[in-house]
Image (tube, rainbow, N blue to C red):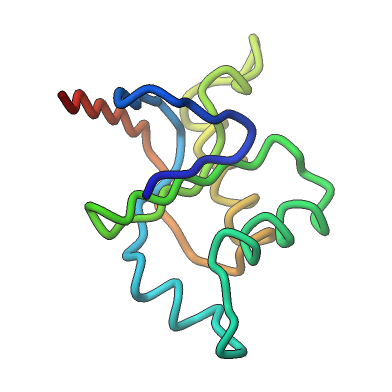
Length: 113
C-alpha cells in the first residue's frame, strides 16, 4: 500500500522528489502507536494538521517498509540554498513529527508493471 499527503495516484507508477529523510516503517509505528486501532496514516495526517504546516509531506511505502518525511522540492523558496532548505526541513520534521533527521534530496521512482 502506498499513500502520500496531498496527492493520490491511481497509476501503478509512483515517483517523487523531496527534501527529507526515510524512516523505518516499523520504528514509526512503534513510536506513534498508542492504541490497538492505531493508524500510522491518520497519526501522520493529524500531526501535520495540528502543526499548521500544510506543506509537510509524508509518503508510506509499506512494500519497502519505509516512511518518507519532508518537503516536496517545489516548496523550496527561490532565494533559498540547499543548505537552508535542509535546515528548514530538519526543523519541520522535529516540530511536526518529533524526530531527529539529516534531510537530503530523496528521489524515488517506482515503475511497477
